[in-house]
Image (cartoon, rainbow, N blue to C red; front, side, top):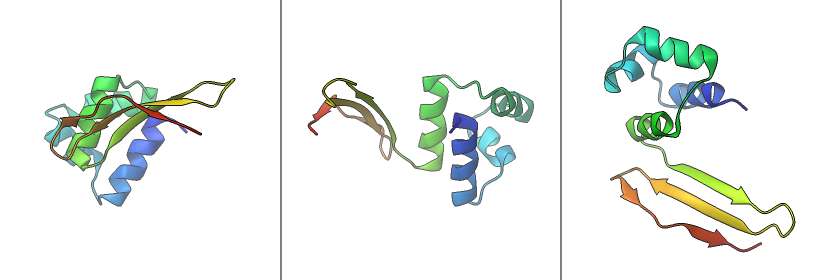
Length: 89
């Protein structure tokens, strides 16, 4: 699923429209609309978006051979940076 679709889902969950998100991010609506249309978000963009929407942003890397996972997470309730956690399968 694309990042834009996931962001739309988060907006629905928060009963928020893109205009309100744009304002909270200090971005113009046209900038955010373009990013959504192109599905063009940097990791920095995504972190800011989930912070505004009060969600956590996690990335998990999984070794295809062993199934070993490395989770690089960022808990954004109070912007606490978590160290990388290794998840054993």
